[in-house]
Length: 303
Image (cartoon, rainbow, N blue to C red; front, side):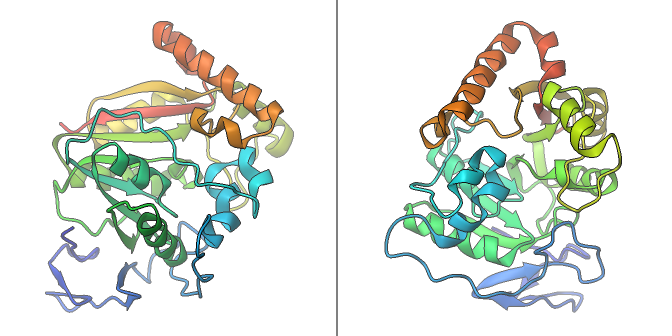
């Protein structure tokens, strides 16, 4: 992993760049955040003590944040998680290609990518999340590298990665911050490289219900509220900033449906995930159904 200064993209060594910008290194992790940028996450820049690692079982940090990182279907598992929920990555085998997860937190998709044959790097503004990700990778015998940083100012050189992936991250950003992040994804992708980004669809059935019942179509009030995108604006903005973009359904009636986690869920949620997966498969043969999926994948190819 070759890091550059997030301000001027000059080479970094021992936490400082060629132009004199210096960054802290905490627990051997470079913290490459810009202190004059408004945060995209409440944990940006915080240096807090991480709970001690477990002798075995699930890391206590993951136990604490599982509802926030994996969605409402998982809230009943807070402090009760029996195993790490590692999802299936909907990408071809990695063949040692480089993989960047933007917004990795404790690193579940980096673990999935490593098991799929990729060489993963994770970035997140939360130092505690990155520290936990490193511990989880070590516990699971996975090779992955992690850095604290901002998706609007990725600390990587141009054309560094074959694949850039992000799940349940940019739907919490303002539109301006998401677009700045898309620009950066386009910059760090190699020519012909692929980005795969999950977003919430304005036209999804559950999405519409949430806007009526919870928000009454008001603007989001908190940093973590979901921002909904139309399929058309998502496709056009990514095409402009990354390259040709196609949309596919990720799930229906929920934003984080992972079929691999069915055994962890109560029966009512299992039914939701199974129906979601059935509709997703139908949407592969009936593409118009994608327009009403609650959770969308946008796949872009770097021009």
